[in-house]
Amino acid sequence: MKILFILNPVSGNRPADTEHFARCIQLNFPGADMRLTKSAGHATELAREAAAAGTDVVVAIGGDGTINETARGLVGTKTALAVVPRGSGNGFARELGMPLEFEEAVMRLQRGTISPCDIGRANGELFLNVAGVGLEAQIAWEFMEHGKNGARGKWPYFKLGAKTVFSYKPPVFDMIVDGKKTSAAPLTLVFANGRQYGSNFKIAPRANLGDGLLDMVAVKNAPKWKLALALPGFFTDGWRPFGITATHPVKNVILTREGNFPYHIDGEPRQASGKLEITVETHALNVLYPEK
Image 1 (tube, helix red, strand yellow):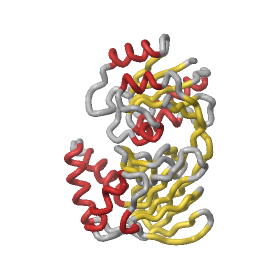
Image 2: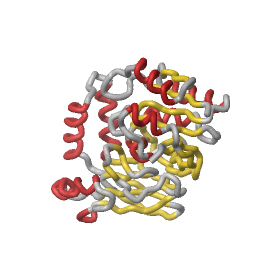
Image 3: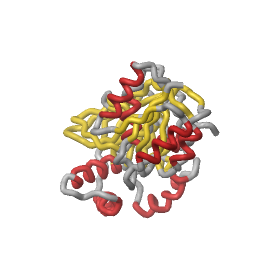
Image 4: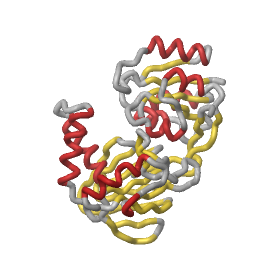
């Protein structure tokens, strides 16, 4: 099997031990190549080159952003995507059942199984796990803006998130959901290919990566105390108290409202100009699932 490992050396909470990673990879996959990303978009370029060269599997080592970039170079090819998690939430890696320890994750890839996986698109841009608008998209956008002034890390994100939770007023979106017109003003509106954001926070516990559908999950703008009491339920596989969420399987959704508004794809903030279209592409990507 011809395999390439793509490592983002700045993913995760600590510097990458590239020499240790290389030894571990050679122990499990003798002769495999490992390339380091140098800038944003480099993983896509490396993956695209590998697919064109007939590589069987490209392994993304990093967080959801690195995995997303790598997948962009593999969509529509025979080359399969595999992942070794090194991020914070590791949502897509958890969906695949990947261990979070580097050595065990690499070992489990030796006898993995390749299966087709759906992808989502938000205004044409690929997402593997979740995209959405609303509260978490607003927080992600504001944190990106604050980051331009040097505000990084979990504590600034927590402070900004707490402030936004109490000040955020959900806007009304006009929507066309699989051809039917409606409108809504949810606290959060998520389009889930996988079940979770990461860290086992399951926003769509019945979502399936290969069913040809996205789970559209609306989180209602309920009183803050009710949301707080409901929070533990999101770490289970189905318990959702107080009717906080409403879920519908969808294939195509168009959201519109006046002006610009933020959205996110796999946690990365973006901004739409009046319109956001969400679509799903069935079995557009081959994925290597680890040995169970």
